[in-house]
Amino acid sequence: MTREGKFNKNAARRVRVAGKIPGVIYGAKEPSVAVELDPKQILRILHSDSGHNTIFDVDVKGSARVKAMIVDWQYEPIKGSLLHIDLKRIAMDKLMMVEVPIHLEGIPIGVKAEGGLLDQVLREVEIECLPGDIPAHIALDVTGMKLHDVVRVSDLPHGGKFKFITDEDATVAHVTVIKEEVVAEPDAVAAAVSPAEPEVVKKGKQETEEAGGEAPKAGGKK
Image (tube, rainbow, N blue to C red; front, side, top):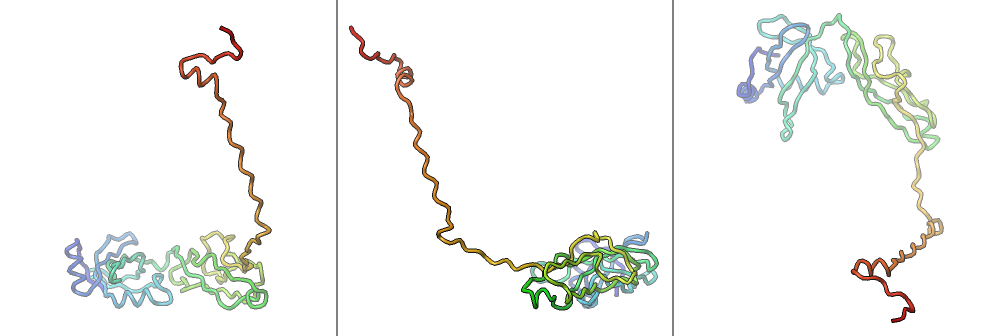
């Protein structure tokens, strides 16, 4: 699947021209090694049920076969082809943390019979387990959920093979009421507030003083 190599930008470009994907494999207290990957095999893994959580064998020139997992990948934004892959060596006897998708199965009673709406709040959950126990996904049967029912992380099935890292009180899904849009009737429109009275500007002494003279006294004699 792979061949050892040291890639700078020009070397990575040559790898792509040859129909391969440049990548790197690291982890397990071993040095990082640049590798060339078969795009068909990588795409098959990414599109499988377990996706990037799939553990597979990697042959590296000058090294023993190792177990690895895809931890990062980059696509070319226009053509959509893979540009680079990061692989991590996996020790099958060491616990690791991964995120797995949550699949809801069935239609809740609260949707079919009570007019509710199923809202999935959490689509992935982080777990800790041995590499061999990583599930492709966690299936949750929601058919028994009634209106206003809530399923939390602690309610997800796991069979004791892993523990949740995500907060167990976090909401996974709930059945809510469909809110109807309320249109205000003309009679319900609040009465218009009467316009404020115009401010009365006092004139007289202040204007006269600003003009440099005194205001004349009413009724004065010569």
